[in-house]
Length: 429
Image (cartoon, rainbow, N blue to C red):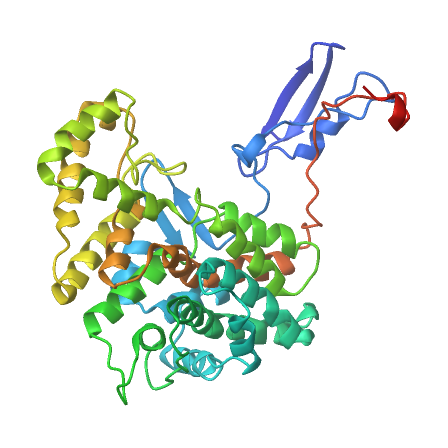
């Protein structure tokens, strides 16, 4: 018998069980053999929020939270952010390897040729109120793509899957930009396929009456880096939503809309907005020490520090801090950057925060970048969603060909009543 086993003794019955250990885990279904009687359902594990449960095998993203390591397909995020474009990283996530120059050119051309959306989307967008949240518009429009491409439901065909992947990555910036333009009451700007992925997105957001929009290369590159940093992050809430909805066998657009919906939640996609609100409340550098003391006393919350996964410095935070500096070279320095820098400096030196492993995460600086670009806070999670689309698709594609995966169906511990007597409505108290 393999030594890679766990011996479990059920003290209720005195019976001992040998459970195989594979990749540092036991299979939850193996617990079902542990029973009190033949009629017993068997033992289950209870794990709210999947704090210690692996739901899949994945080769997309590796995270070591204790060491502050993030890798896409084995490549360190620092190297990819420095040397690759977002579309190159998207190719890596989806295909499992970095492209050759010829493969990247074909991939880029494919995505560029699918950036336009059906003209009916203009009427679709016009149906939203002027004050509709852009994330709600993005969620609805991504889901609506399934109605425009009904063949997408044929997920068994690898060519169909590839085409939907290209379409989704190409159209996400277009739909996102349309959402912003609708929010501002401005006419929609069509894609300019002579520009890069990020440059085209900037054009669709900001182009007005000029014949040709030319994005500043520093902002263009900073945005590309931001998309790379957000591209994937293992089995987070939105990725789990994509996999869960996708497990039902529907088209990828429906699964992606579920990912956008999950990211819409303030606990997931709204963290950088909370950071910005905190920095505005602090207002000046000289107010930082008092705020720090308020945090220690439990009267204030330090936003943008700490992470459920990382117990070390978030590797994305260092990269994005440099990107923010590059953006400020173009837009002018935001006074809140000095507040953020001072807050980070004190927190990293104070034993209270160091002992609790509260280090800056990616959200600490991203909100400052978005604000420097002139974006309303409602657009912050939309920017997140554009970058994350490649990771969602990579995870969905991986799940689609994983023979171990079945339709998601978590168990529950029932806590309600049983066998109650029905009381006619006239006799109810």
